[in-house]
Length: 413
Ligand code: HEM
Image (cartoon, rainbow, N blue to C red; front, side):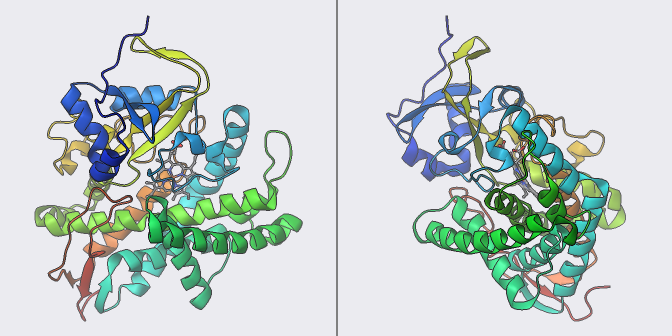
């Protein structure tokens, strides 16, 4: 006997989901006094869940991704046909091993951080800048170099524009999404040309780079990647690295709003790590992740059937009131003497990297953001009057102004 989950009373919650954005699932959890409820989104029945136990169930359970798993409006920054995220079981494990080697090894993380450090510092010159745009350009330069593809001048500006538009378009509608689609086609065309050449002569691509790793990878069936799948994976290295710009902006926002923390970090650089963990816990990025059950199973007495659609609230899990005191408050001291568990800070997924869909770029993301925070701490800048509000109904969110800063002429070391 399945134990009945509470149900959102609306006949269809699509409009509410769009209106309430990041708060949609957690508001209903609070209203219904639960961590799991049934609803309908886009006329499809869905079970919405939140909290560390739900994250463990979702990332450890038999869920497949793919387009049917995502709600119409939810950000799908990373999905694409044939990518690691679309694979399951042995096929996923084989591809994921290559991913972990190419973006999560010590050498890989050091390389991208070094490239970003130089590109970020070079752009943070005296004058007025929009930090979001500046960080996107620096990250795109770093990501392309890291991947093994040198891009400069106009080509780099094109790549940055394409990546930024895809990220913006992923959760948007109308013109925003249309622009993302157009620029996506253009960057896929570019990436396919790059990968066709690399697959034809893998030894010609720089050793130790994602370009070489993708060109020499063999899937679980022993076959190399097709040019189009390799192109998708190449873009899956560059695009989410550019997306880290949002974390740079949210970090700058906390530095601005919490001068006490800015001062503490200046005195004790070891606190940059808890500061960035707390920023990632709170930052609105990918609101929720969808999965479709590959087989039936029982969780907390509730029976899931094959084909059931489940949405894990990533935003609400990291702010779960059952896991955190004052969950919405910015308190980096939470992480001064303990690291997050695999299931309580989940903006990039949860569980074990090798066997789940948890983000292989998480180490690089953290290291890049920490490097940006250190650079901002060492830079003399003012934050002029601007609209720093973060609209929570817009996926993916960012302060409205993009965070304008005025770097002083005496500025950087
Ligand atoms: C702001 C930074 C980032 C955020 C918020 C983010 C978020 C996520 C999330 C939530 C997932 C889990 C998807 C799922 O459960 O199916 C994921 C997976 C993934 N991410 Fe990230 N990510 C970020 C940065 C990166 C970077 C820097 C890279 C690459 C260098 C990357 C590459 C990937 C890939 C390839 C997957 C699919 C993994 C798999 O299916 O096993 N991400 N990311």
